[in-house]
Image 1: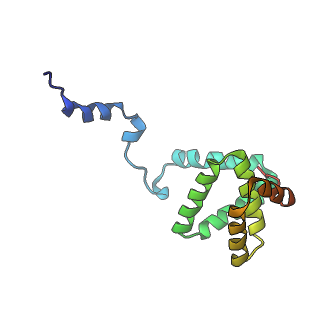
Image 2: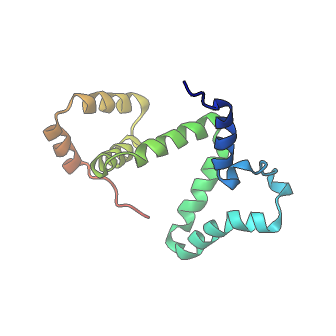
Image 3: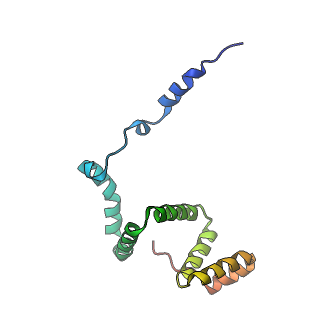
Amino acid sequence: MKTRPYFLLPLLLACAVPAFAQQPPLPEWDQLTPAQRETLIAPMRDRWNASPDHRQRMYDHARGWQQMSPEQRMQARRGMHRFQNMSPQQQREARALFSKMRTMDKAQREQLREQWHRMTPEQRQQWMEANPPPPRDR
């Protein structure tokens, strides 16, 4: 029986990891070089300059994000990730539901959520026709 050098596997895997994964962690913002800061800021500056009609929304979004607790930010990230993995139809439904629920109190939101889960696909389609999602602004 031929023995295999399994002790070499970690070494081989370490060599196969991309170079960026082996770099030391980046420092706090104040310790970044001007070039590193520019790399981070440039995409936002480009988006800001390219979208004058959306600047207020971007600014309000950034202010709202700063006011969130770390737990709220984590929940928002999970929600964004979940939304990105939805089908286009599910995204339309989610936008319509979110838009409608923004105008409701907690009890009304819970009632709509329960109602939605009991609806048939045909009933959901009728609800969507009566409550279309707002136009996308991106």
